[in-house]
Amino acid sequence: MSYTLVLGSKNLSSWSLRPWLAMRQFGLDFTEVVIELDQPETQAQILAHSPAGRVPVLKFDDEVVWDSLAILETLAERHGELPFWPRDARARARARSIVAEMHAGFAAMRDELPMDCRLRTSTPPLSADALDDIARARAIWRDARAAWGDDGAFLFGRFCIADAMYAPVVSRFVSYAIELDAPCRAYVDAMMALPAMQTWLQAAEAGPGA
Image (cartoon, rainbow, N blue to C red; front, side):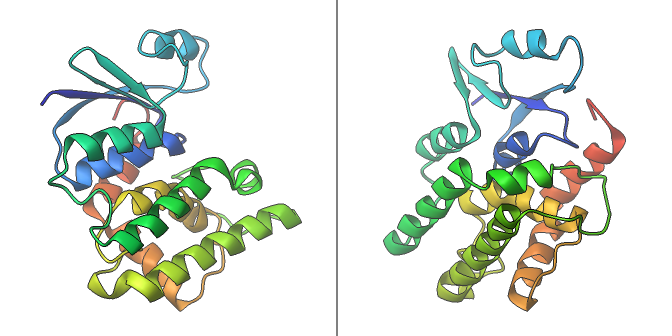
């Protein structure tokens, strides 16, 4: 199967990280097209790949799929042999819930802690809404790890879509030195140690197109 994944700048594009990380983690072969964000030509370049005008975009055969979660769901459907979702039905239901919550929410945290993979700084002053978002993310991680984490270091033991969706939060928490308890710190460390995550971070450091 021949896939092309159209991405934004790896330092900045949180939504691009999600499908990229899952595809690398599950060993899917794909070609990357990286579009530098915040440039005069950025929108025209993205529109050449998708009518939605946003990245990421997955292209295969004559299909075009945009939106990170739509891409991940499409890949899960096409590669049922791979554990994109937990095999256990109860774990899968919880995973879908927390993925949907991340996809639709956490607006204050996104705004006040924008993804910048190169950044290492102290925690800035944050609004009550952003602090609530951070507390909610930590609670989600603790609950998933406590209930389903015995089989590995990730939210549901083995890496799945839920981990891909929360990967940019991991990056933000590292960039802005967010305080973490022991279970959350262990999860962040496991995510940051993933070879695929390290590859993304190295490319982010190198700059657009790397």
